[in-house]
Image 1 (spheres, rainbow, N blue to C red):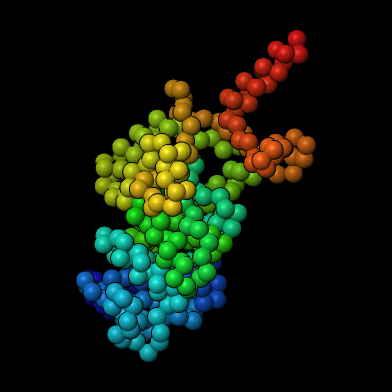
Image 2 (cartoon, rainbow, N blue to C red):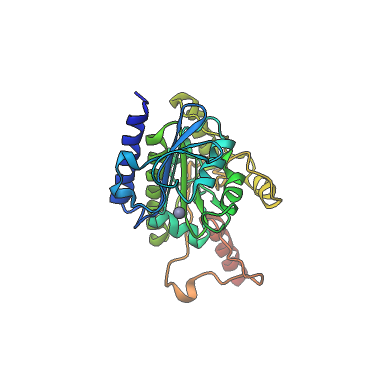
Length: 294
Ligand SMILES: [Zn+2]
């Protein structure tokens, strides 16, 4: 069923969905899929993804040389080529600018907190690839750091990238990222984000096999160690998930700073860094202070 004509039709349909869901505006975004072992089928540059027709697609080789098509391939072709080079298992790539996930990418906040069980079993965490000038060689360089361990990532001040075993799998991961971003934003606006405890995260990871989910890498046993590897410039080999120890509890309450809370909001430390405390840590500090007052 994966004939070239059905893949062209699938790209048209996914382009329509991306545009209809406002994951792209104007001519943003791009989609590609492997065509056999040595060719790619890709969206052309400078067309709105909501109004494509099957004949618009370009066929290229794995080095990006155009083999067929009236139009030139996507301006983000280099990023797509890099993904296929790094991930022989990946069959399709989707890039878009979903507004809420891209807002996190602009704020520099990765979607890496243990919040939703289904996201933990499927995508794991969604990191942010460093800022790179779109359509230059910088972008594949930034993506290379995370693509071996992740099926989805944010691109700093730009958008999001997802990959999958077929076109729809890559597209659905884009939906999951935007949905996760939306839920995270609402929880943070409400001022409370209960986190799934580390022990439960380990249990969920164990379910990946049961559900037949092929995650590209395991969740990191020690997130701080994994972040140090990334800071040193090495590629991610596991997925960083922020999950506190539960001490028997499966959810750990976390109180966030309320927007507009004024003086009640935590003050930046001397280094300008915000201090985040779990509910339990905060309670312990308050109890200590009360004891000292007595
Ligand atoms: Zn883009």
